[in-house]
Length: 120
Image (cartoon, rainbow, N blue to C red; front, side, top):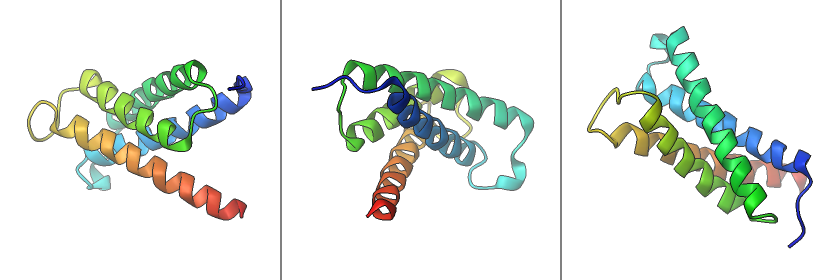
């Protein structure tokens, strides 16, 4: 496989930042966006940043990987980041983190499918 251009890797990883940020924001306030505070913003931004870094490392380690791989890595890294950045707001120790990771994975799949549909 050919190594990817670093700008392409950054572009793909920045999408992961957005997906992690949105998923974390929604899960922290349990779908009640009126409860979103500056503290939530900082926490979601941190989760997104860790997702960005993790996906960037994964894409550089595995050049030419599929969009599904990027989505999977986004979900896993978001789950781990969410778990270690803040205590859970609901459920058991890993409930919120797992749901946040799954949400980021789902958003990544939806955004990739939408982007591909627009390109055709």
